[in-house]
Image (cartoon, rainbow, N blue to C red; front, side):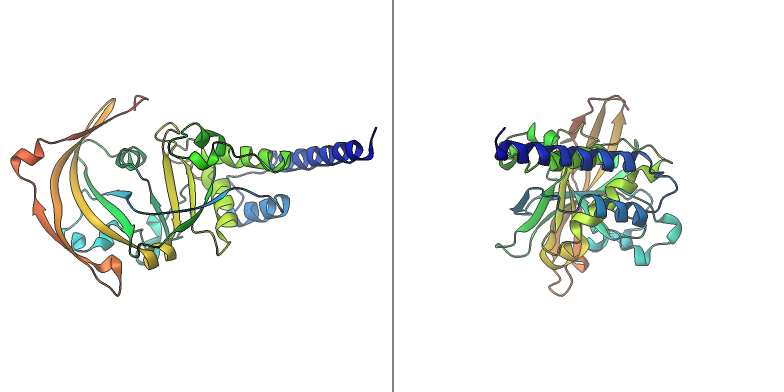
Length: 302
């Protein structure tokens, strides 16, 4: 046996031991009672040297949505209404764990498809939903992003062309990515938010790099067919603005959402000092416009 083959075999055996060690430790973790910080500390140690693809993308045309049923009109006068929630201004009783963000952590969730944010939001019949579309402040702005859920994203080559021929640098990298992906694709029921802790811990590790602004990962609510963007709050504040904004009334049946136009931002007066404080001049949709509904069908009955 040549020296080269022996070295390759030795490296392969070492990688398998590392992977098995990591999997054993992860199996022993109690996500319900462990803190995000504890999980992050273990992951940081075990995935040292892990590599994954990075891409610089334009952020034009990102959708964000939130339910505003019961909100006061005065709270909808600026684009702050559709910005990420600033938890410094929100009662701690309303803080919660999310897919990429810890309790009280400011974070921006969006998608490049309206249907995706509606399905992720999962509004009730009769709810009012506020929808904003975000664009770059500056034409040359690019957002440095990393992928999570590479194998699922590869199945949509039209959207993720750069992943079509992606190859992992090592078997270790592939195994780590498989584990990370599984945690980003967990379906989490109400009351089981602790299951978000592993994906939050990985998000913290990946986004601690000052050169990474965003994580791109498959949307669970869309059966992994479209993507979500999880973006650092400071990037949004510095480089994005809400270009257009709408209010829809939701009509929900067992297998579809129908969006009925309610109001739209006829004009947004941009605030150069702080984009989230840009003023909205609302206009009610006409009766004929209200008939121009949008429908999104659900593959799974909910």
